[in-house]
Image (cartoon, rainbow, N blue to C red; front, side, top):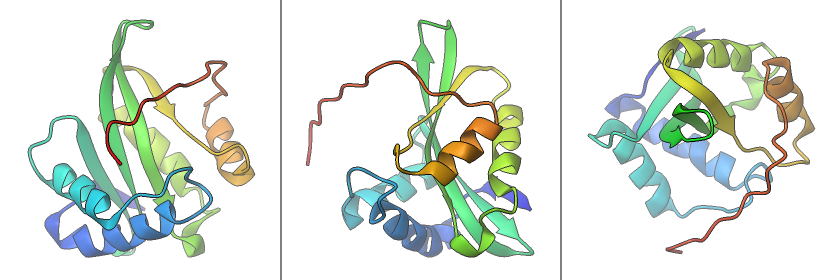
Length: 148
């Protein structure tokens, strides 16, 4: 498998995968087409806080991921949020998530923490994340949405 930065020619296929992902039970809050397209534009543009990646298996797109940057005062450094991680069903179970996590650690060697969110019911994803060293955070997260 090859992981590379998202390119303009990937936008339509990434959007289609995002629509499947955001309409699935894996996500608490569905997002509008407008928001998903903005996410892709920001990955492809000059937005410094988000990056997009695609996974290729024999030159066919098998999935995508988006990462966002923040700073963690608790750990004193950069925190990489694994915002989106989607693998097409026909490619699941082949170890692509493990390859992606390894790639992320090499991509961001300066990071002191990696974070992601997962629905409690998504036992397959939880197992994959635990296999790659992720643990359940004891924090209770709170948010305030500033736009619909």
